[in-house]
Image 1 (tube, rainbow, N blue to C red):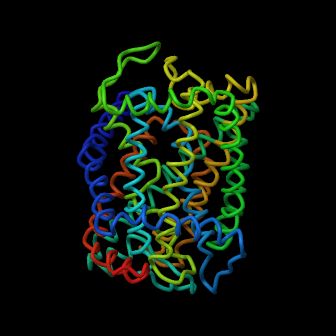
Image 2: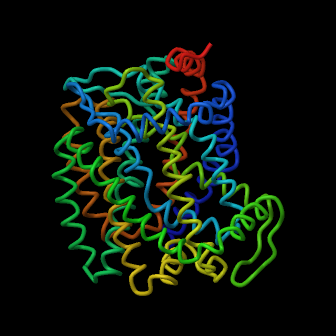
Length: 450
């Protein structure tokens, strides 16, 4: 007990150093830098983003060449890794700690995060290679090595990526599924772990194509299912929307006094928590999603970069904001609850005895999609370090962690997960900033800018 408490305290201190204000500031500044250098691309080219990512896929079915996946499959895989508990519990926690004003700063972080993600995707496409199996493979480890000429730093990123995929991408998600199944349907966690491991094993063993195929069907269904439930709550309280918008804006620029179960918060707290939650919810700056995008069959790096912009837009501006409106319009945000419990409370005001099941099923889908997406990231990191022939050992370990995670205690795992995510961002941001000139050049080339 004493040893565990000591380790937990060390990890907590390490998290405050690694994931503290300095990293959040650098992440925010990176997005601002690429926003300015590309002439606010996320605004000027947003109609093109919608056309490329929504209208085109609806008009015609895209196909992928040998060793690649379609741009939509790449997006679905990346979204599978980002849409999750952060969209349900993360925003609720931010509101309960720092008030509605935190949501404003989450949206600001997402606005600039679009360009961080764009830069990562552009560089991943530019510096990708054909792997031993003939598939396109890329991501931060490749643009750090081949572009920034820093092979040791690239190895560090891949090494951290392997452990991050096992912890935050697997054990935490598996445990979330087990808890949701136990609470909603009274299924023992051990049984959930075994079944989940079998399903994950079947999907992961199929390789990139199988993971992408499952993601392209699962992610739209799970997103629509969750948003439909949230929209029912919002529509039932639609008359509260104007006052809620006012509450969000007011809370972003002036301190909020204590009210109900809410203890009050300063503007600095709203800004700090909102920006940090916004950045880590959509993973802009971690570089992980660019591993999926690097496998896409695309005409030009900047074209796939538009899908990166849409990924952040949909994850935070759409899904997270819908959760926000559901919580705030229902009037339960200041009742003293936090996290998933607060979101469930909001759903239950309109959908009594049904809302909790909507959240439970959504969490199951979100967590599963995150597991298979992160398995793909981990495989690519393992391939970079140890070669294709050793990936099978990683897959076996990943499946074992899926089963074990369902029954594991997560006090330390959450701390480890947060730390690993922060550590992934450091080498990635170094590579992205050093190669910034190529992002600008490829943007002008691909977008026809002068």
